[in-house]
Amino acid sequence: MLELLKQIILDNQALTLKAGIPRSLEIETIPGKATICMGVRRSGKSTYMSQIMQRLLDQGVDRANLLHIDFFDNRLHNLQHGDLEQILEAYYSLFPEKKQSEKVYCFFDEIQTIENWESFINRLLRAEECEVYITGSSAKMLSKEIATQMRGRSLAWEMFPFSFHEFLNLHKIESGPLSSKQRLLINKYFEKYFMNGGFPEVALIKEHLRIKIHQEYFNTILFRDLIERHDIKHPKAVMDLAQFLMNNISSRHSLRSLYRYLKSLQHNISPETIAQYLDWFEDAYFLFQIYIYDGSLKRVHANDKKIYCIDHALVTSVASGILVNAGHLLENMIFVALRRLSEKIYYYRTKNGKEVDFVMILSEKDRQLIQVCESLADPKTLQREISALEEAMGELNQKTGTIVTRAEEKKIAVNSGTIHVVPAWKFLLIQ
Image (cartoon, rainbow, N blue to C red; front, side):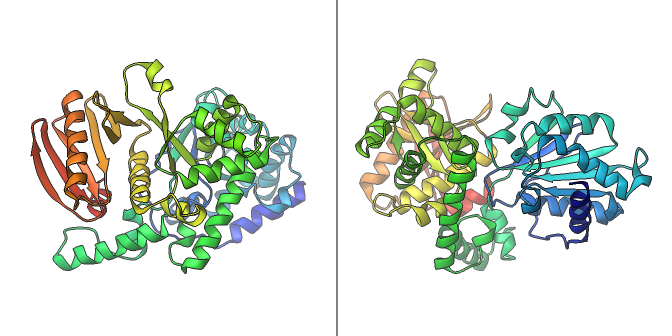
């Protein structure tokens, strides 16, 4: 194993680093803490690590001071926890002059594949002169789970697929002060983003290939991050549940309704097990649930949850298409944009039973009400959306609310304050 690790270390140092496009995420390192970049598979975490490596090289760091191990490397399939110490032994046998005299920058991709990896990282941070960067796509990387295991020696950051900003950067489209021509161009690329989604690998390829790759992502997430990771005994139930939720994206559900659905497919799965599956979906950054915004914890858990996917275009590639429409996809897109900013996202129901899609909490003093509607051209739709948002603004003491549409833009004065109708492309650029 030692000789193999030496070879892998040297191979990785000889690789050409992936350039990619600059990401909006700005990771800040803290001495003595491992920097963890976590998110769904194929969101660009490894490329982002390559960009950090390149910045270090540009700052004058010797390439030999970069220690990079990808634990998805097939050659490391049999690596066990007890073998992790050999990584340092292999590195310092190659570069003995750096031991305790120069800082080593350690990059570990998907280290969560090794059981009890945390103790190795803890020792590394305590005993060596190093900076540690870790990527991960499974529940094991979540900061809430590793907080005690890492004893405060980690700081976690989330990586999502491309935002609309990043998608424009990929296509070299400026999003600064907008002329009429620039607005038209951005609108054109918004339609491309709406079709392609944010996964970096599929941003520039043909539709039939995009669909095929998305479907591979879907299957890989289910098998690697859920079924294998958690040793699930009823894999078909997980797959049927995921497929059902993708077909009903942006909709409300209850554990009871999901239980009845799976039971109709002859799956003997308890509501408690379904709840566990839903938690694991979220831990893998695949599907997210949001709760109703309510002061009563009892009512919060008694009410239905709404479900969203990490990428709206992934939905179109996987869902049957019968129940998913452009309005659902637009709402899903806006959810992901909000989720980049805060984990505290809810839906709201007024005292009269009218629903507002999102309440986003950024701080105690910063609370936003957001409604999503593809078009307000129909007067009945306009009245419905304004009425729900106006009531919510009054009940929550908010002076402003937002309706995100596909293209419309205007301001509407209501008794509670002002409603801003904003086209989705502009909303995504100001977030």
